[in-house]
Length: 458
Ligand SMILES: [Zn+2]
Image 1 (tube, rainbow, N blue to C red):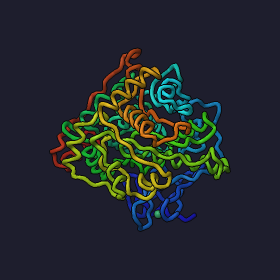
Image 2: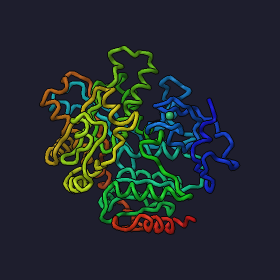
Image 3: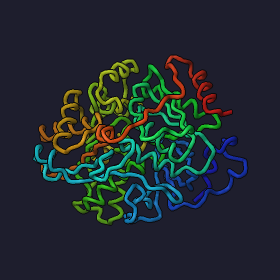
């Protein structure tokens, strides 16, 4: 292994040089139970807990973890996500937190006549052991990203449509990690917690903005020395955290699913599922076995906001569309948590490559179908689910009706969020108050100044 990670821009304030020339930044990172490799050129790195990009000169490509333990060895004494700590890029003792609950469906499976339908439930459903405090699978990534970070005194910066921001706000509050969470105003309704947030959490709302507006401001804020970009799909912590959905499924099912249904905005979760499936397959040594074939990714979007569906249908590597059209479509969808018009589609190892490799497909559902599907799931399975999960259920129904999926196949349906209503019944939730409200028409540099002042950063 070379010392290539010293060529990445240093994130230690106030250094940030490329390559880093300051102590202690030049010191080798603490040894970890994994290394990082570029999915395009194979260049390897020690993980300093922060690296997001390969430093070689080539097109954008995702970094991936390579764990010393090549076997699937859950820590059986841990009930939560850190049951899979050997395959998570985290260091030290981690306080456990919730994980995906996987069970075989009877209600929905009976109606759709799917004898091998499994549910991967992410949310709050105590009777089933589901205890995610913010009711979506975004909590899996927040726990892992924070567990990966070194003890750097930087302000973690996250852009979100709502659910990711809520997960990070809660996780940062619990760990007292300083952070800035930037969200569009309509995402604020997801910021209800069982306790007040710690003052280290700085919630910034864009009153008339959409998710990409939050991304733009967060990106500009991160260019300031005191702030650290969470990194989204580029953060191996985020993807390996989401990958535990598949690890929980394999733990329960003892095989890989043939089809995997999930609603997508960015598609980060779907990329992570395929990465995890390959890791599990390789661990079993049963690469050609019928139970270990890679699952077909069946990605689901909510009409009329469908950039991934449109690009896939047209066979294009890049989603295209005018921002004005996207903004118009965002206002019309039921599942606004899926409204990312800058998904990592063309990136090497991203959504397009994952769809191709898995021989998957992209499906769509309208608002009425998604609402009905969410109600149907509640009636048949016994728990309320998020709009995005309703989209996935509707797309599954449609795929079955159109015979795009073999009824006998083993299907894993990711319910990416649920139980928010169930939680509200038994807990007095505390709504979070934004510390700063911005207009998307504000000049970016003014927005950055206001956020920097809010955080007391130099
Ligand atoms: Zn590379």
